Image 1 (cartoon, rainbow, N blue to C red):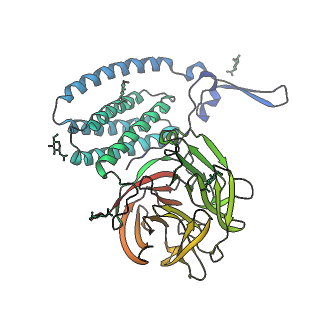
Image 2: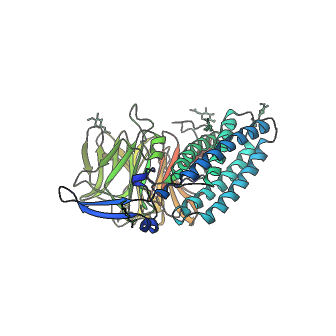
Image 3: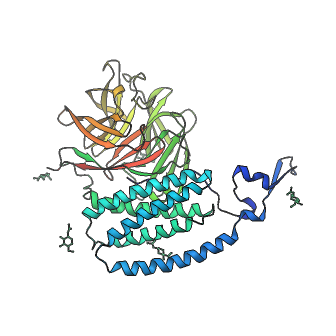
Length: 458
Ligand SMILES: *[C@@H]1O[C@H](CO)[C@@H](O)[C@H](O)[C@H]1NC(C)=O
Ligand SMILES: *[C@@H]1O[C@H](CO)[C@@H](O)[C@H](O)[C@H]1NC(C)=O
Ligand SMILES: *[C@@H]1O[C@H](CO)[C@@H](O)[C@H](O)[C@H]1NC(C)=O
Ligand SMILES: *[C@@H]1O[C@H](CO)[C@@H](O)[C@H](O)[C@H]1NC(C)=O
Ligand SMILES: *[C@@H]1O[C@H](CO)[C@@H](O)[C@H](O)[C@H]1NC(C)=O
C-alpha cells in the first residue's frame, strides 16, 4: 500500500564535490593532469552560483514561518472533533502542490516527484481506510498526525527546493513510512499469533507494503530476494538480508542489523559467496544463520553456514533443471521454512513437471520425506510453505496474483482455492513466508514488498 523509492543516489552537498546535472558541466571548469604515481587526476571547479545560498536563507525563513503557522494550525485543530477530515483535505492540497512542483522540476528528479505523488495518493487512501477503523483516542493516531504535519512542512519547503534537500525528504519519508506500517499493522491485522498453527489455513493476504527500491537503487536488478532469517539465532532477531542481481546468478548478500538499517542501506556485512559455490534462481532462504540455495555445478541444494563459514551440498537425484517457475529462469529448487521445518520444492521427469515437495532434515541436510503434488511447476509463479501447507501462486493479470493451490502435508490432501492479492510490479523472483513474523516477503521486480497473512481461525 505504501511506496517509497530511492531512484537516485545524491551525494550530500559540499561546494568542492557538488553534484550537478550533466548539462550544467559546461558552466564549470574542468582540467586534467597526471598525479605523482601516474594516475589521471580530474579537477572540477564549480561556479559559486551552484549553491543557492540566498534561496536557502529564504527557505529557512519561510520554513520558520511555516513551523509557526503549522503550530498554530495544530493547536486549533487539536480541539476539533473532525481532525481527520481536515488533514485529508490538507493531503489533497499537498498532492496538488506537488503536481505543480513537478512541472517545474529538473528532469533528474522527475521520478522522485512521480513517486512522491503516488505515495501521497496511497497515503490518502490509507487515511480514508484508517478513518473507518481508527478510534481517535489512539495515541498512534496523534503521533501519526504530527508526522503528517511534519511531512507537510517538508513538502512545503520543497517549493524552494535545492537538490540537497532530497536526502532530507527521503529520511522523513522513511520515518513516516515506518510509522504508517506500524499503524497499519495494528489496525488492519490482528496481532499475529507467532508459531500457532491452530487454524485451517490462509484466509487472506493483505495489501502489499512496498518498502522501497533495492539496496543498489537499480531498477535493473530484477532478480533477487530479501527478508528475515526464518529461525534467527539469539541476538539476530531483527536482522534482514538482501541479494539482488541483473541476472539469475546469485553471488552475494547484504545483511542489515534491523529494518531501519535496511531502509538506510547501511549493512553490517557484505557477504560474497565463495568461488565454486555460486548460486542461481533466487529461491533461497536464510534459516538459523545458514543460507539454503541452489547451485548448478553440481546441480544440487547448497547450504552456507554463516556462523561457521562452512559449505555443503546435496544432490537430489530426481530433481530436474528443466522446470522453472513462470517469472524467472533457473528456479529449479525452491527453499522454504515454516513452523514445521525446512522444505525444498522441485519438479522432475518422473513427476512430469509437477511439483514435488521434500522435507529437509536440518541436521543431516538430507531429504527425509517426499510428496508428489498435482500442480505443474511451469504454471506456477512461485510457492511457499506455511504451517505445513504448500501454497502455490499464479498470475491473474499484471497487478494481481492468486494463491490457487494448496497441499497439506499432514493430511496429504490437495485443494484448489482462490486467494487474490495485489502486486506492485508484474514479475517477482522470490516469495517466502516467514514463520517468525507471519509475513510474506516478495522481491517484486527490484522492489522490497511484504504482506501480512491472515489465517482462518474459524
Ligand atoms: C577556470 O578556472 C580558473 C581558476 O579558477 C579561472 O582562472 C578561469 O578563468 C576559469 N575558466 C573559465 C572558462 O571559467
Ligand atoms: C473507541 O473508544 C471508545 C472510548 O474510548 C470505546 O467506547 C469504543 O468501543 C472504541 N471503539 C472501537 C471500535 O474500538
Ligand atoms: C516534527 O518536527 C518537529 C520540529 O522539527 C520536531 O520537534 C518533532 O520531533 C517532529 N515530530 C515527529 C513525530 O517527527
Ligand atoms: C484450537 O482452536 C479451537 C477453536 O478456536 C479451540 O477450540 C481449540 O481448543 C484450539 N486447540 C488448541 C490445541 O489450542
Ligand atoms: C553452523 O555452524 C555452527 C558453528 O560451527 C554450528 O554450531 C551450527 O549448528 C551450524 N548451523 C547449522 C544450521 O548447520
